[in-house]
Amino acid sequence: MKSFYVYIYLDPRKPGKYCYGNYSFDFEPFYVGKGKGYRINVPKDYNSIIRGKINNIQKVGLDYIAHKVEQNLLEEDAFNLEIELISSIGRITKFTGPLSNMTDGGEGASGAIISDEQKKVLSLLKKGKPLSLDHRMKLSESHKGDVPWNKGKKASDDARRNLSTAHQGLPSGMKGKNHSEETRRKLSIARRRRVITKETRKKLSESSFKVWKIRKQKAKMRQIINHIRSGNETFSNCQ
Image (tube, rainbow, N blue to C red; front, side, top):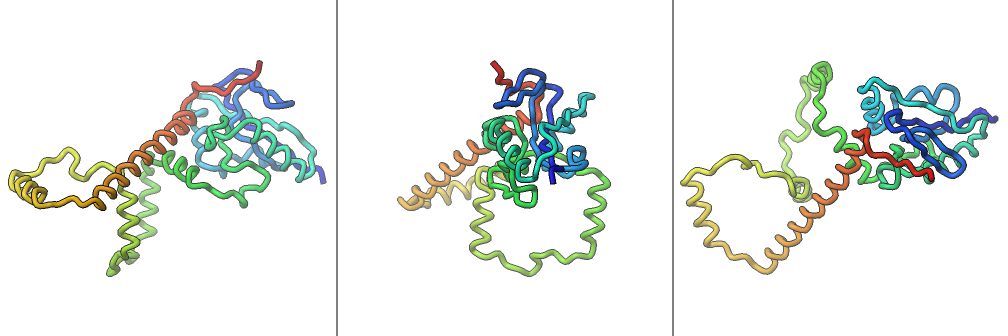
């Protein structure tokens, strides 16, 4: 039954000419989807990148533009067009275009597999966003009387290693604080007695490289986030 359609969301803050194969738009696209019925009008259950984009558009007194690209399609044809458009326009998480789609299309939300890179993007988007008082109260109520999951448990060697890796590259807990004179003296004595082996030097070198790599990845992620949150940069490409 030909009841499906392919739709696209456009950003009214970014007018221009955006051409992709046989299709062109007057505003920058930021999401491509396939659906039927009222699907085009329910963005509330999409990923947090799309919701953040829509919120930023609405903050400046505008609203996203929902446009049906093709209608009266078989589901297979709708999936194929969705894949074609996502490939032509490009995805933010792949640094190939402006789309907030988390997959290449053709599988529906239930088939979405979130990559580690995409998880980092979503994590960065949520960082720094304070929870509302109502949200905090609900979380507090839901956990009242719960026994901490790690009470009485000792962390395994694997868990310790994972915690160590997770904290690599993070600022020290002593940042902005000063050791006392007594503590400095003890640290100085301890360092003089320490002998750094070749193996230790190798570990320190590997650790420094990991920190550098993490910082590079975070810088890359920030580029994505800055594009999502800004209304300036565009991907206008019509000749």
